[in-house]
Amino acid sequence: MSFPPDTTRPIERAARDLVNSSYAIALTGAGISTESGIPDFRGPSGIWTKDPEAERRAFETYRKFLSDPRAYWEERLRSPSLLGDLSQVEPNPGHYALAELERMGILKCIITQNVDDLHRRAGSKRVLEYHGNAFRLRCVSCNARYEREEYDLQRLKDEGKLPPLCKRCGGVVKSDVVHFEEPIPTDVARQSLKEAWRCDVMLICGTSAVVYPFANLPRIARQRRVEKESRTESGLYVVEQVPATTIIEVNAEPTPLTREKVSDYLIQGKTGEILPAIVEEVKRLTRS
Image 1 (cartoon, rainbow, N blue to C red):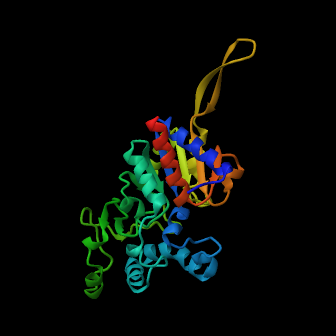
Image 2 (cartoon, one colour):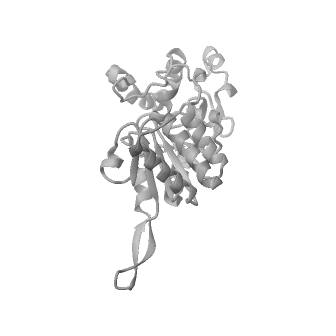
Image 3 (cartoon, rainbow, N blue to C red):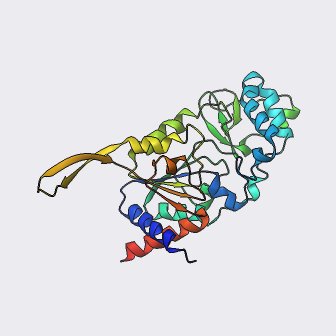
């Protein structure tokens, strides 16, 4: 696939930044999964754009869980997922490209907003699922996670034994998906902050950067500074504080990170096309 020159040069730059990095991570959002056929929520054809009432109900879900966990589970077992049957969705070239960068030893971690499990299915090993995983359950007391198949939820419903209880501590179990107004699980939130603070390259793929606290992670990375020595025209050496992290966006459209200059540069286009092209350029650079 060929790209126009104004796209090709940033692809080469991104590949060079990744090759020269010591600790690169990726942040991903809905834009990387829409290319697998999963609808987003706030886009022109998004679920909530088309059905504002569905968004209102989504804001009530966590409150319902807190007030009546049994009713929460009964409704979840009765209602189909807004995202459809995610088990039938396949990873796309963008997911596979990130997994390949990890296998090459360049990408150290993915922090994703997506709940679709596509990064793991594409072969990525170190994935922090910031908003949870639709195929897992989580204890709200101890954060223990279980594959959905570990609980026979329909049998528990038929026997009047909902909500399911944690096999480790006996706490109430909910879907691992993080609902509106629900805190990000402490283990994931803590590790994500560590990754954002540690990285020297952050590759941001397909996120609108408007959902918080996830959208704070690039800003946290941007705050870290390192000392850089340079020589002036008069021959004097000076030391200045410069950003420690190069932040690259791969997105269909500019975001607040672009406009506020949190990111260093934007490669505009589809993640399923741009990310494989970056991988090929990385391979060329590492062969030469």
